[in-house]
Length: 163
Image (cartoon, rainbow, N blue to C red):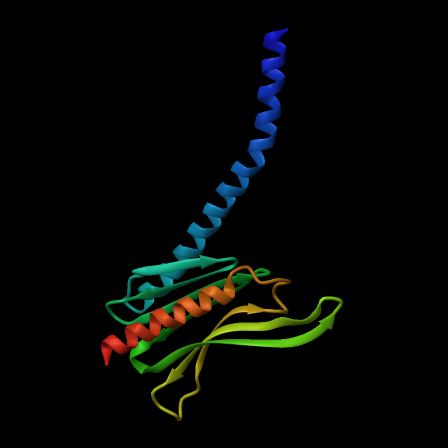
């Protein structure tokens, strides 16, 4: 009787834990692939990723030595690879485009776009953008606002150190 209860208990515990283990492995595999894509992009510019961060379906990274920022996003099977040479950049800011809607709880801000904007040194050049969140690609935010603010501050600190 005790052996039967132990086996049933073990099977139930395994059935409860196994989905979390599988999800963790899938996330690690996906992040490894994303980081590899970002590193491959950096190699094309003779750079090496020294600092990076994952958030949902994208990864952002930077080469502190050569002053390049890199971005990789895979949303709904659409890959976006992009980079910016920070020596051509005056400043960086996080940009959040939102609309206010009324609901039963009052007014609510609904974000359409969260992006990192790089303002060029040369006014003739167009500003460069890394789009973290787009309402068309995703239903809800999952940390993009905080990542945009964090990386804006990090890049602006790096730009101050260079000047």
